[in-house]
Length: 163
Ligand code: GDP
Ligand code: MG
Image 1 (cartoon, protein in one colour):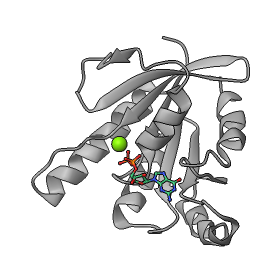
Image 2 (cartoon, rainbow, N blue to C red; image 1 turned 45 degrees about the vertical axis):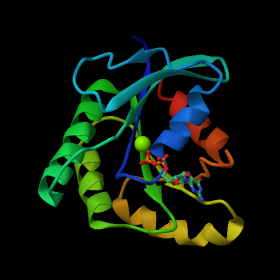
Image 3 (cartoon, rainbow, N blue to C red; image 1 turned 30 degrees about the vertical axis):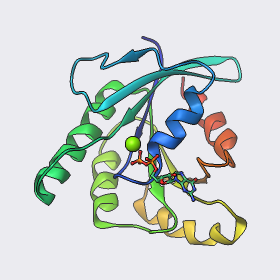
């Protein structure tokens, strides 16, 4: 299947918005490719001269916080197994949550390249607030706006270097 980039993160940080932006020009081709769960969408994206598969994780259905956390943890573990590179998305408006910290912990133990994307940086005033995400210990923080596309090019430049 070639190179795979998984977008992980807690609900509402903007994963699907980025996924839609990346796969916009090439329609999502396969749903549920791995047969693992309905909660994953696969699409094709292109950046510079490289084509790759993007996985959007999410759509969690859970009736308690514990089950919810387990579902997210499971998605992250599958992403680590399947992906060439992982985009760990967080939300600059809400800042770091316990769930972010938990996901970061799982990702730190993985051997795959992880790119921290601070989403919803729609304007320069929000740039400074992204500094807290260096606290994950996952290296560089890429400030992006999935809505406007700002910063996504710089992020993708680095992601495709891992292929
Ligand atoms: P997901 O649950 O992580 O897949 O998040 P979604 O992509 O569904 O987005 C959750 C909400 O955040 C939606 O209302 C989006 O419109 C909004 N959103 C996504 N990206 C951005 C962004 O870059 N800036 C702002 N201001 N809102 C965003
Ligand atoms: Mg989503």
